View 1 (cartoon, helix red, strand yellow):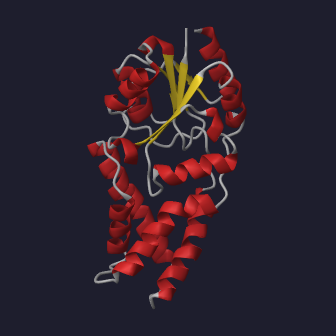
View 2 (cartoon, one colour; view 1 turned 45 degrees about the vertical axis):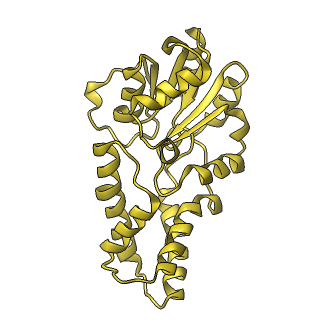
View 3 (cartoon, one colour; view 1 turned 30 degrees about the vertical axis):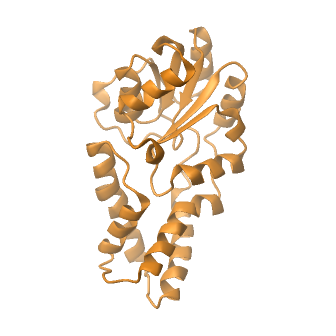
Length: 243
């Protein structure tokens, strides 16, 4: 019998389809910070550098080395791709502060029906959020979850910047088992990335759902066999209630 259901956050609960608009929102605000310190940030340079920071630096460290780089290290990498050196520390810290908190000032949206699924499942199961963090640390992601109205439905929040390790590190899932005093057979994990969400669950014997509505990282997908693959939240609910 299932007692606990854990969710990934981005591209599982919250949609990544607004990423283009969010990049534009970040550019406008970063440009203001650059201008404040007498620097010019061109849009093409921003897009190129932010994409390299994410695709080359962050994904390389996160997926290959299984840890979450700090916002500070990501911002320094971003500045290096812009060929910025010897900049004031106040400038750097203002950039970091903005990058960490930016999601709390912008619009985010649910993947269709995932907010409904969370509210329905919370009536019968303990819910856990397990999220690897990017530029935005857990303390600000909590504010985002409050803003969109689902914070109160979760009993436990695990963010990689706070845990010190990223999925698929088994310590994350073992912590869930210990926290609730349950067996692996009593937990289901839902996420969009096979190499992190599915593998992490499988490694400790937890059932896994590969929610592929907005999956974009299919790294080594053929190696993993989740218990359910679907893009339909209703099928997730039916699957959990059948166990």
